[in-house]
Image (cartoon, rainbow, N blue to C red; front, side):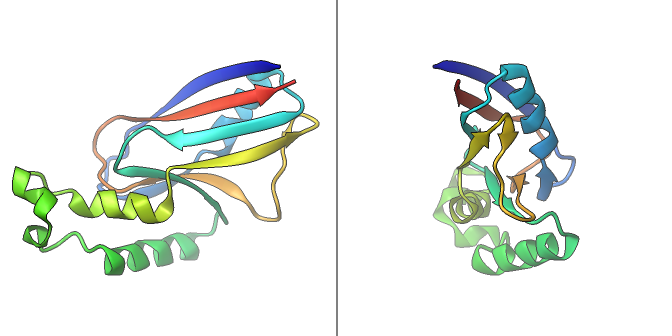
Length: 139
C-alpha cells in the first residue's frame, strides 16, 4: 500500500466563506499515482471545516444564513470562550456543525463521487493562513 500527503494553504480575505477545493484534491490524487483507495481531506484548524455538497451559490448562501442563526457571531459577549479576548467562539461551533473532514473513495484513479458532489473548505474565522491536509492511501 502507498500513501501520499499534501497540504493545501488557504487565506480568505473575509471572516467567512466557502471554497471549492475539489480541483486541488484531484491534483494531489494525480500526483499520488494511487488508482484504488481512499482520500482523507481535513481542515487543520479549529475554526474551519471541510465538507461535501453541491457547488451552488444559493446553497452556500443558505448555509451562511443557517449557520449564523445556529451560532451567531454577535453579540460576542454571549460566549464564555470570548472572555479570553477573542471574538471567534461562533466559528468553533460552526466548524463543529459542518465537520472536520471528509473521506472519498478512489476508483480507477478518480474521486468516486455521487451526482453533484464536490469538496469544500468552510472558513468561519478568516483573514489568516490556514491549512487543509490531503492524505491518500491505496494502490
